[in-house]
Length: 315
Image (cartoon, rainbow, N blue to C red; front, side, top):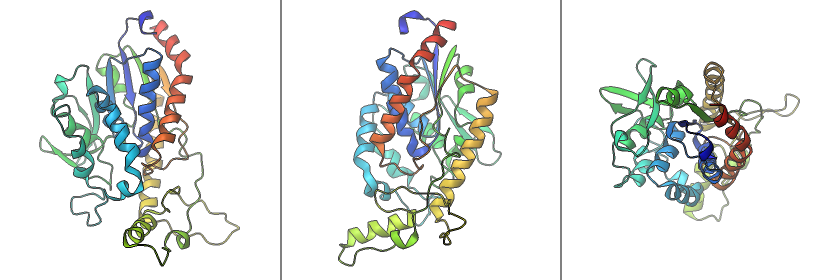
């Protein structure tokens, strides 16, 4: 497909936390149909995957994600919140600090930029130069979960607060055709049942200490190990539903915010092709459902193949 066009292709990878593993599937599918983006822009997890792709570490990122599981996810939790967030950013990002990621954005083989939000003013910040890993950390600093990142005298946080799918950034970097990946297209439409607290809080009396810790942490996160974390959608005629956990409240609020902002931004800045994997049933903290999410992203990109080809011919 690449041979039929000479236009610069921009790929805008959107926010969505654990849904972001779908970006890996999207990139795999695009490579199979002969589409290699000239410009990559990302917000939050989209910036993480784009950076991994540009530094030839997509396989490493996928392997790490597949081997993390629930225990690995719980290992990132910092209950003291002494660093300004619930999740230890150092543990998550230092895993990928190496010779390939210790580069400046301007030295990458292709143009890249990430979106962040200035915490003090709410301004949208485009990170187009400087250390790559620091820019990714700032873009992915999810409110309430990851701590804000200090850069050039400003505190930066999650780019999803201002531009969840950075179509405008791709165009500003010179893209003629923009392919955008929206991971949040269904999140407001699908109800997700809550896991009753009585089910999640009870650990087996004979469970070993590690098992008890895992059960307790899973209950605090609002789920059993391997079970879907939910947002309260009780039956009004049924018994009273338990109040949402801390993580359900944060996750549900972030879902609503991303959905509303994404709709508004895409209406005013539509891409040439929109890939929207059906991920409404995946919670933003379900990082252990890697294979399923990647497969959904891969299928969505393959289905979009004819639309991409048509957009490239029109350009």
